[in-house]
Length: 398
Image (cartoon, rainbow, N blue to C red; front, top):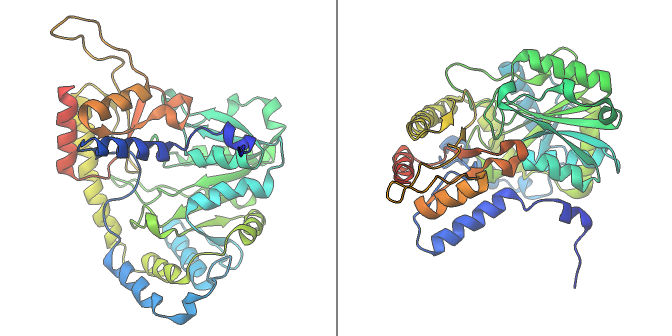
C-alpha cells in the first residue's frame, strides 16, 4: 500500500541488522551461538567514566536541550586530547563538532555537500554507512577496491578522470574496518595531495586509532601538512572506552566543512546529552590505563583466534590494529572422507551460513562490505578467550 522511496530500494539490507536477525533465529532454535558478528565491545565501560555520568545526571542543568555543536568544555577536551596524542592543534570553537556517534556524522556529511549526481569515492570493502549516506543524498557512489595485493589501500591512480571530474568527496578509513589494515603516513600524504588536486573533501574515519598493538601508533590525517585545507576526521569514544551505547563522538578539522555538517545537524538532531559529554571529558582527560588494559585483553584474544584459524587452513595475518580479524577461508572444504565426494566451493555468505548452521559460530561475510570482500570473513574479537577456543574447536570438526 505504501511504496518506499527509490533510494531505499537501491540500498542492500543493512548488514548488521541482517546478522542480528540470523543470530536471533539460531538462538530460537536452541543453538548456543558464539557471535563474532558485530563490533560491539563486551568489556564494560570503565568505572570512573560511569561514575562521572552518574554525577552529571544529577545536575538539573544537563536535563535540558544541549547545544548543537557540543559543550565548549567537551570540545576543549577533544582539542587537548588531539594535541597530546597527535601533536595536532585544533580550535575548539569551530574546528571540533560533537556527534551522536561517528555513524551519525558519517551518514550526514554527504547531505551537506553532495548534490544529485555528484560522485563520492568510497572504499570497498568498507563501512556500509559511507554508501548509505551517499545514496540518501542522491549522490553516485564510486567504489575504490581495497585489494590484498595493495595492502588494502585504494589505488588512487586507477580512478578515471571521467569520475574525478564529478567527484566531490572521498571517504578513507584507517585503521580499517573490515580489513584491519593500517595506512602508512606516505599514503596519507598522497591522499591529501590527491584531494587538493581534484577539489575533494576527505572524510577520514579514524575511530580505531587507539585500538593498536605491538607499539604501533595510528596517525591522524590532520598531522599531514595542508590536511586541514581539505579534510575532516572522525573519532569516537565507542571502541576506545567501550562506550558504543553512549553515542558520543566528534568530527574535527576544516572549519568550513564542519560548518556544513553542523547545518545539517541543527535541522535533524538536538545534540548529545550533556551528562554523556561530561563523562566523555572524564574519559579523554584522565588516565588512559583503562585503554591499555583493554588492549592486553584484545591482544590475547587476537592471538588465540589468528593461531586457531591458521591451524584450520585459513589465510590470515596478525593485525596491528582494530579488534577485527579479516580471514580468507579455504576455497573449498576437504573431500568427504566417508563418501569421497568432491569439496564444496563456497561464497562468503554461504561460508557464514554454514558456520552458523553447523557450528553455531557467527562471523560477518566479507562481501557484505563490498564485492572485493568475497572469499573473506570478518571476526570481531568481542568474546572471551574461552569462547574463542571453543569456536575454533567447533570449526575444526567441520
